[in-house]
Length: 345
Image (cartoon, rainbow, N blue to C red):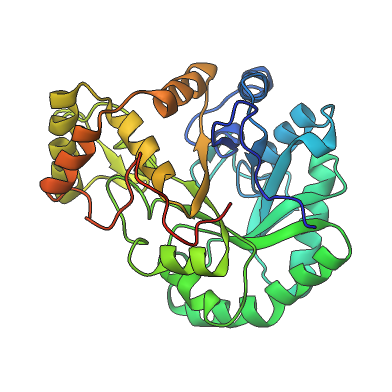
C-alpha cells in the first residue's frame, strides 16, 4: 500500500510547514533562523513539509533537507515541485522573483521529460535524499504562462505526467500532483489524467471559495489528497484587517472588494470574540476534501500563533452568522458539521 502523502502533527493537528519563507520570500532569513523555524515545527509535532526549486533558487530545499535529514525517514513527509530548472550563474541577481539573497542560480521553465527528470534528481541532491513523498507540477496556469498556456497543458499531459509516473515506478517519488493557485487548470488536467495529490493555494479560503462548486466535489469523488495553501490569501486574513493599513491579496495590493469583504468578516469576528486568522484556518480545515493546511511562516512565533489559531474555540453562532449574512456560501462546510459522504479517510 502506498504511504500517505501527508502526516498530521503528532497530536493530530492538521498543519504542515510550507517552505517559501525558508527560501527568503520578500525578506532574508539566515540559516540559523530558518533552522529554528523547522526545528520548532518538528518539536511541535509537525511531520509534513513542502518546498520547491523556485523558493530561493534551491535555498529552501537545501535548508529543509539539512534540517530533516537526521530524523527517521519514515516519520515525515517532504514534497517538492517540477517545472523550473536551476542553472548556476556566478552573476545571478541576489533578488529574483520576490526572493532575496538567493543562491547563485537562474531559473527557466522546462516541463519536458528530460527536464522533469533532471529537476527531481537535482532536488534530491540539494536535499541529500533518495526519495520525495510527493512531486507537484508547479504553476501551470494561464496567469503564469499567458498565450502559451494551452501548449503548456499539452506538454504536461504528454510529457510531464508520464515521466513523473516513470520516476514513481523507479522509486524516486511516491505521489504525483499539481501545485497551483488556479482551480481551473486542475479541472482541465483532471479531464485527461488522474492525480494522487493536489496543493491548491488561495482558492479555498474564508475569503475566496472559487474551488468550492466544481473542483472540491471532484477531489472527493476521485480521492485526490488535498493540501491547502494560502489560506490567509497572502496576508489579508493573517492579521486584523484595517482600512488604514495596506493589505495584500494573492501577493498584490488587495482590491477594494476583498478589503470590504474582509472588513465585514472582521466585524462578525469582533461580535463573537473570534480572531480572523483562527476563523480562516478552521474554515479551510472544515472541508472534508482538505487533509492538511500548509503554512508558510518565517518565525517560531508565527508557527506557534498558527497552532493556537487551529485550536481556538469558535462558537457555532459565529459560523451561522457568516452564513446568514452571505459571507460564506450555504454549501461550504463549517467546523462542527458532519463530514459529507465520500470524504477521504
